Amino acid sequence: MHTIALHHILLKSPLLADDVAKELELGADFSELAREYSACPSSHQGGFAGYHQQDELPITVVEALALADEQQTHIGPVQSPFGYHLLKPIGEKPKLAVSDENILSEDAIESVKDDKMPA
Amino acid sequence: MIKCPLNTSVGHVMNSEVKTSSYGQGEASFEAAGGFDGIKQLVDAFYDAMETLPQARTIRDMHSADLTESRDKLTRFLTGWLGGPKLFSEKYGPIRIPVAHRHLDIGPAERDAWLACMQVAVDAQPYQQNFRNYLMTQLYVPAERSRNRD
Image 1 (tube, rainbow over the protein chains, first blue to last red):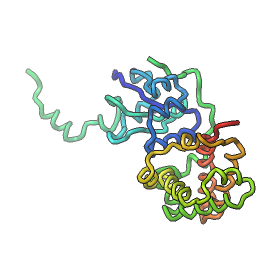
Image 2: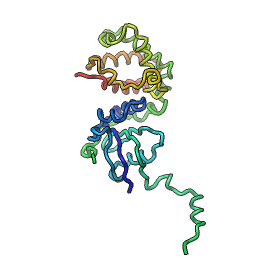
Image 3: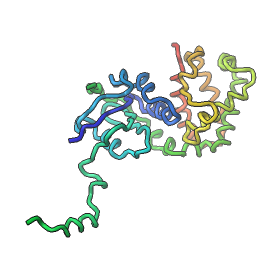
Image 4: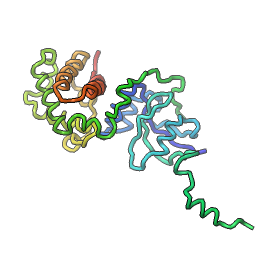
């Protein structure tokens, strides 16, 4: 199971989440916004909420981080039972158990078939 | 390790009209507002309303006599805020709306006066009614976040 770093701003209102996301889009500092608006205690650490096993986190958060583009400075809002997360992808991405990326292509399957079994 | 407040849940019912519309996705809002020219027209109507609405006198007095720069700043800000090019930061640097207004005395009356001017301006634009509603709902948030007293 992967351990991943969680940096987020947790908001309770979708409208506020959208507006804070807009500010991030316009160049605002993630840590500063986390300190000011996040409903998570990690606000005191600029949004850094520590390291988590994947299965400790809401699946929507894990999926959003796993599918994040390398160029994205932030993701979201992503809804979970806790509210609306704005995520800052830092460090290793989660790996989804089943995803399009993990499904072997036909070529890959053929190359596996061609491998000889060990004696 | 810091845990999220797991004992709380979202008690918010999303506005289905807002959340199911495409506004807010990519450049949809920017385009619905008529692009840069449409936003400039909106901003001009906004400041024209500020010059005339009696309830806007207090917020008008918070501005310079010459509104040229205010018009330029708001046009550029809204362009990026609605998903278009980030023209504000290109010219003036990064901005956070609540921080930029901290030096001003903004209570509910000032917030509502600002929104009243914007409502007049939005109503005067050739927008779809659902975009007008969307825009005013969205604009309430930064207006409220700029309030710094009860």
